[in-house]
Amino acid sequence: MSEKPVHAPLIQFPVVDDELVVGGIPLRQLAAQIGQTPFYAYDREAITRRVRELRETLPDGISLHYAIKANPMPAVVGHLTTLVDGLDVASLGEMRVALDSGMPAGEISFAGPGKGDPELRGAIAAGITLNLESSGELERAIRIGETIGVRPKVAVRVNPDFELKSSGMKMSGGPKPFGIDAELVPAVLRRIGESGVHFRGFHIFSGSQNLRPESLIEAQNATFQLAYRLAEDAPAALEMLNIGGGFGIPYFPGEQRLDLSSVSENLQRCLGECRAHLGDVEVMTELGRYLVAEAGVYVCEVVDKKVSRGQTYLVTNGGLHHHLAASGNFGQIIRKNYPVVTAHRVNDAPRELVNVVGPLCTPLDLLADRMELGQADVGDLIVVLQSGAYGYTASPHQFLGHPQPLQVLV
Image 1 (tube, helix red, strand yellow):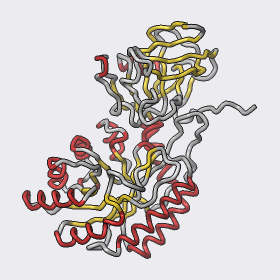
Image 2 (cartoon, helix red, strand yellow; image 1 turned 135 degrees about the horizontal axis):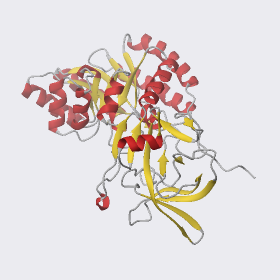
Image 3 (tube, one colour; image 1 turned 180 degrees about the horizontal axis):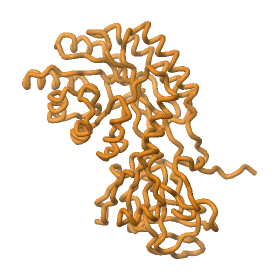
């Protein structure tokens, strides 16, 4: 009989006297310091360590950009600004957070379909690079630049004719709302040359949340080859090439952390090849989830414990309205459990098979489905790990009128 899959080992946070420690503070002490539950807590040192380890692994010639959409909390973005080379935003609100962080506008890019004129105007005025998603967006950018007297900086976001295999979210290949189909890019490049806007390069992003090095390598090789072909029609030499990211983290039982050694070796080879084709171009990787997801926790409190027809339920004051992804309602087809622990009974305490649910009147409000946790009672804290990305801002906080969670960087 095969063993039941388990979550990847807990290595991002210490456990002292069987209690989880986040930001150097035991979880129950941190909860007392914050003053209420539920809350999200992000560990400053864990983020720093992840960036440092990534820098040590990737080739020296790779610039590192943070995609703010993963976690736009201003304190988190401000901390990452001291660690990375640039920021990528997807809205006017994120753009303001990026500029407030102190990152120079020249190191900020703006992607996303459906940019409104106010967003284009704000980015152009600030000197931020627009990753163009359509020929129509280019025409609006040209018009706005002429109106306000500022030359737009643009890169072309390309929808490749390939995808990142085995990715959690495919962003390319086939019809997509993202980017300009590769076969249409040469005509857009000609229009850029005629218009006189400042052409900077390409953004080629094919997928996210991938744990297979061989898939990442295949997509990166195809990305560079596509960039070389498209550069033949470029109106000027490329200044930058954003190859996207796609690095995944382990969320569910059976998944293991991504080994980047072979990916890094391949990128080193690609960089040498790239210099031969494109000269002194800045090659950047854009990462969000990979930098922050494992550094965050979501913490809620048990308000009731009950048994229903043989199953034990821990009813908490948190749930899908705070953490939609952990409930399984944010991209999962078949629901699987995030890693969940009892805050002060992580490893050694007696275990109990439980369901962790929230206070909402829906069976979808489920944080843990028949998981074995350290025994918990009313007043104890339940912790959902891997919660630093797409947790707080991707959740329907107003659903049923419950209070919003807090966020802290510790």
